[in-house]
Amino acid sequence: MRADASPTARALLAFELIQGSPGITAERLADKLGVSGRAVRRYVEILREADIPIESERGPYGGYRLGRGVRPPPLMFTAAEALGLVMAVLDGHHDAGDPADPVGAALGKIVRALPEPVAAQIEAVRRTAAPAPDRSAARPDPATTTALVRACSDRRRVRLGYRSEAGSEWVAEVEPWAVVVRHGRWYLLCRSCPKDARRAYRIDRVRAVEVLDDAFTPPPGLDPVAMLEEHLAVGWEYETEVVIDAPAETAARWLPRALGRLEPLDARTSRLTGSTSNPAWYAEQLAMIPAPYRIVRCPELQEAARAIGRRLLAACGGASPPT
Image (cartoon, rainbow, N blue to C red; front, side, top):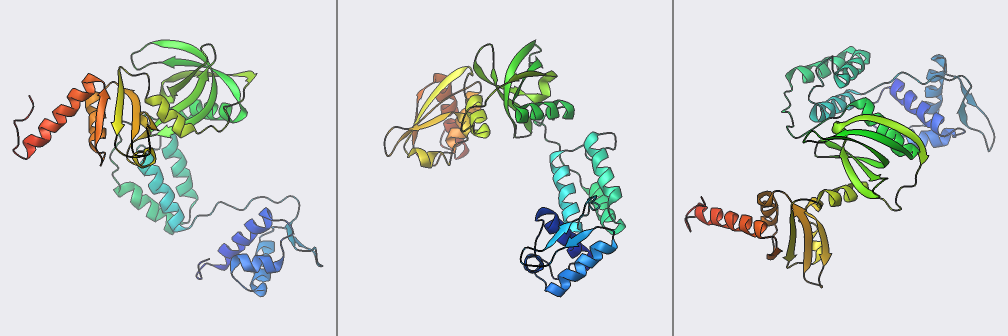
């Protein structure tokens, strides 16, 4: 703990320790706070003077505990904590300065509850920071997201009203396994009940959520991020297959999982299988592999790789640029 922490800050930390570990001894508190036993007794007196009932018991099983009817202390931030929180909000949500936006309104409440010197620093950051908007981000409705997160936690099926990017609309009954945030977009990883198929729905495209009474059990050992990225790599227009002259565990450090499934062929080579609707983008990702590789399936991907090669040769005067 910082040596310059005020007695009040230390007293609040003592409160948290007593609240989390009823019966904690003075010696244990002193060890946690890095102070003497005499200082611990002073912090307990500060709490009692603030009308927080701290009870103490003597003997080998004695210690400090909270009395009944305790209300939690007011929310308190250090300047560094408050600034870190605001910076994280501004980095991830670029309407945080708009008081009409839910996040902006919540941030304003936090700022108004802070001590004036800390609040002044926060307002300076909010006024002068100019975060560049993430054009690919798509933030869903908070109420919709909350309903889906709760359904995942409670393991209850839901009925979704959904609208695709093309404008098609349908209703689906699904088992919501997890909510995953990936590159500024929120996805619901789930199982479509009628089709018994894994699905990943963009939450910003969910138009309605109805939580059902039916319970479900998610797959054992579920890794939501890995499963989502594997799912996003299949079902596109062009099927791909690439052989890489590197062990699978080594190649895995170079490749985004969204490119497809990586498996070992032998101790020295691996195979990547997936799909894409954008061969040029896929070829650019492959070009960053620091090892030889061969595109053994997908003529469209092969031509996209040739175009990258011609462009690189043209950059160093070795060939004419592609048309």
